[in-house]
Image (cartoon, rainbow, N blue to C red; front, top):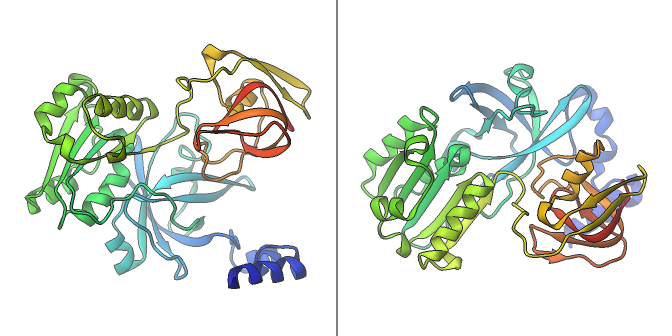
Length: 358
């Protein structure tokens, strides 16, 4: 009730959800990059983990309330006068935050990425960026049930935090797939394993041994059916691993996963053929059932440039008005109504003819 009253007061007097939002431009004169709805964080260092991955070490301000292992944040930076945001998992432990108010975001360079390739050369030690509150439910519960973590590539980032936070009191087995010399945090992970008899870590060379298989489960973690299984990596890896676990009898309630990017949509069992009309641009794109795409992918294929952020349904920057038609939300797995409403372009698939105000 108090929060609602504050928002009403701010909107009534300043036409902003927060009072500080009205004064944001003035505050930025003294605090560059200040954002009223985010938390300031100072860059302590940028550490290269390998040629493709680096960790951004941040000292967060006193108002930031902390996080649970497995959660992520929205990072907001300014590039050429434009604020851009992306979602990154927190790879460091809650203990590091509690003792030093420091968190680490371990980031993979994305080919032609607007932020990940640019960031290492653009930021400097001591510079301030903005982050959101910690978000996400990809966390370990408080039960004593054994856990199997399955990671591929940079999917290890939330598991680094989970292992550091749960190694003392949980039976944990990690299967970590990566290409040769691309495994991250090897020394740190091996140290955790050596200090805790209840932690077992298997590093798997995916170039030689391939992706996870029934043989791998039997060989490395034969009691997987008695564990809670957490999966993190590329979308296709998550889907194939989940299907494998289900086929071997593991309950769906014991499978948890987090996508680095939008959920795969090519296998959704709905008819999507039709025409998407981008109203403002006077562009029409034909959809085909065998080549399902999100509204964002369709817009970009037509050389439109909608505002985007995380591209996985979390930051809501790509929200756009649907004028008419039905879309399927791949994150909530629900269909929209046929009338006007705001939809997220990155996670919505058109079902038949749709008109978008873009």
